[in-house]
Length: 379
Image (tube, rainbow, N blue to C red; front, side):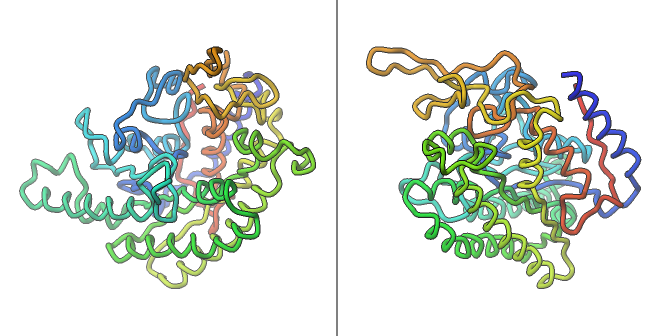
């Protein structure tokens, strides 16, 4: 834990030295689209279930709709921009305030339209449609009088807000259950065409600031290793499934090209591509340098080393199989682990990823010379 404190203190000092007063990185609101990496409660609210303990145990102290022990990467990014955590679009309880943005991300969401077998009905196109309804309704309320000003964004906020995207990993990871690697690679242009269509829709509605995350090293998730990594010859030097990481890299190359195309097509916009894959790969490769003890094994799961992951029982669940009851329990110290539940990262790992995003050097175009953010580390 001490080495982790030293590292994050170094990052914090470096970021402070790099800060400037550049207004172009100050956003009045954030509108987020994605999957479970940034879902702050949308799927749980939309489908009417409760994310079980121990999710949320280390920060919120209770389940918060997040598949994590605490905060997500998007929470740290919001905090760094001096904005409140995003309320989920479908969560109507607790008097949600959408003045500073809204989160449309839903766990298990895909870029491609959902099918009858999809785990989540709220695919990217649906999320964009939800945003369009949200914006139309917000402007209707604003037009009725100033009493709604403090609860919903006005036209100016929609135009100057940041539109953030972190989605695509489920399109790739899910496809491996029924398709070959070649078939998956061949489907990537179709996936990105759907993403492009959604972004164009948002642009036509006045969005101008786009922040697009690529997908991480899918082959290093315990869930994928447990299913597709039983043959050691399919694993790389880190113990990750090579085919999954290859698909992620090809997807990211084409996503990067799409971002470049969009920037050229919409010169009055700002399109930022963020290399999450490199940040997470570096974390896994050099885990001990950053104070972690377990680069792959899940904190909350069942089965013990090397993965502590069993697809039959999710984090916090207790089930009985053939007369034997098993429970997926949390480890003693989640800050020692990168993986929370075999699919999602721990709060500590999310904080590391956010701190690296905020250096600006993993973005295209880079913004390290205009660093306006101060990540408020809470160790």
